[in-house]
Length: 117
Ligand code: FAD
View (tube, helix red, strand yellow):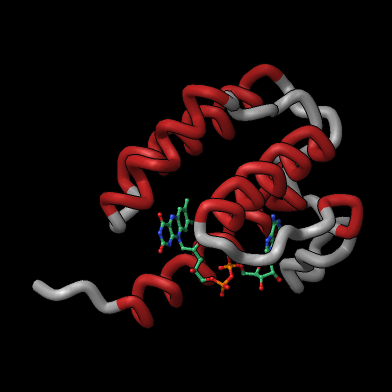
């Protein structure tokens, strides 16, 4: 089947939004299990992302820059950095990771609940 750049970009936008929102709610002080869960998720994501070329590039980046899971800040900063590497390759504007603070709000109204028992 032919490549459809519009659909590929739409999937990318939705995925980045989800990923950044997910790490914005990662615990500030994660347990070892929570850290492992995020790390596993990211590696599995790299295996399963439906755009094969994108996934392959992402896996290459992962082997150079393994996921940072020690805190919410570390995880959000790492993902922002990874997204910027993709932006760079695609010749897109670089995002200022210092401004990531409240940019990704899940709108769930249950601050932090998703990551607690
Ligand atoms: P996107 O890059 O989708 O970003 C959406 C919004 O996020 C931006 O408008 C901005 O507000 C914000 N943002 C931008 N940079 C950052 C950042 N660093 N941190 C936080 N927020 C930010 N497409 C390809 O054509 N080839 C590829 O190889 C490819 N690889 C990809 C790999 C992955 C893992 C993913 C998730 C997507 C990939 N894509 C790839 C899609 C591509 O990254 C874009 O999602 C798509 O081109 C749409 O771009 P966009 O300009 O709408 O902005």
